[in-house]
Length: 370
Ligand SMILES: CC(=O)N[C@H]1[C@@H](OP(=O)(O)OP(=O)(O)OC[C@H]2O[C@@H](n3ccc(=O)[nH]c3=O)[C@H](O)[C@@H]2O)O[C@H](CO)[C@@H](O)[C@@H]1O
Image 1 (cartoon, rainbow, N blue to C red):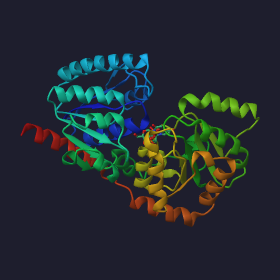
Image 2 (image 1 turned 45 degrees about the vertical axis):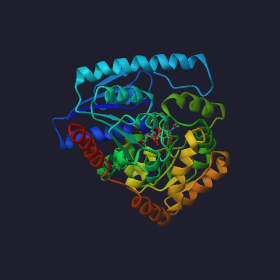
Image 3 (image 1 turned 180 degrees about the horizontal axis):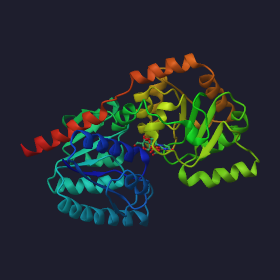
Image 4 (image 1 turned 30 degrees about the vertical axis):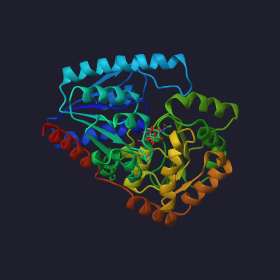
């Protein structure tokens, strides 16, 4: 298959695309892939690191208030559509997949106008602006939450799940060792990150909790987000806080599918891709939904896990050292509770999501020809 993929800005849009590509190359080894992203998003690092060819376009999002910047945004969008049409013409894809972010708006719109089969993947329960816009033009729409179904034209929608779920589930017996971080393999590990880019309030709270984490019988691996690492280091120095041997602070955790199966519990934002991963594997979670997202959708994501006894939630306004430690200790110091939460989480997982999405791609190709 010749697959053109576009999705960008944040890890939540990029990792599902990469997971799909990895699986497609397994089942259809002659697959050719080109990825189109923005010049500034996380895709600039993650996609080439995965050995996938990347083309970039300069784009920006709309501001909510009326502003001159929006004129520039429209200009950049039209320019990108023009650029994307050229990419489509040169690459000659059998199908084009969009996984969200402004850049996928331009690429999928261009492909649809050039009569190429198109599919979008929506990771969230509340549909993103780009996918909403594209839903009129594309052939097929794959979703990961039932709640997204009625926000799209009904005849185009298939439930697929998030391909990242299949990727992490496939590595559940990974031989990754925590010793590569200077941690131990026989001590339960709490992983902490605030989404793919880190979150300042979570970072500050974890920094302040480190003197207590230092004394715990479990270990902590804390990813600050690449761009926020220096800031966290400064906070640690100013407050004279030194992580003990059982606490590691890093900018970013690479190759998460190999590592996540080895964590006892996770503290994180409630982004859709993280949720897909923890439910595929059965990882107990403490979710701190981002209050800065469309229609507060991360709270809805988190509530689904809480309702099924698979996760605990701390809303950001209630997040402080005490609430964080209380919930972390509750899970980390009770192996039986962890097992129960893990089993509940696994029941919600979709470990065949990539295969389902591949079927949707073929459906788009087949039905487009008819
Ligand atoms: C603020 C914002 O708009 N967030 C959105 C963004 O989330 P965002 O990209 O922040 O978060 P997601 O949970 O969707 O994805 C994070 C991904 O990054 C990985 N990871 C994280 C930290 C790390 O050190 N290493 C690493 O590999 C996680 O394992 C996961 O695969 O897109 C998601 C999918 O559209 C939405 O649900 C989120 O609401």
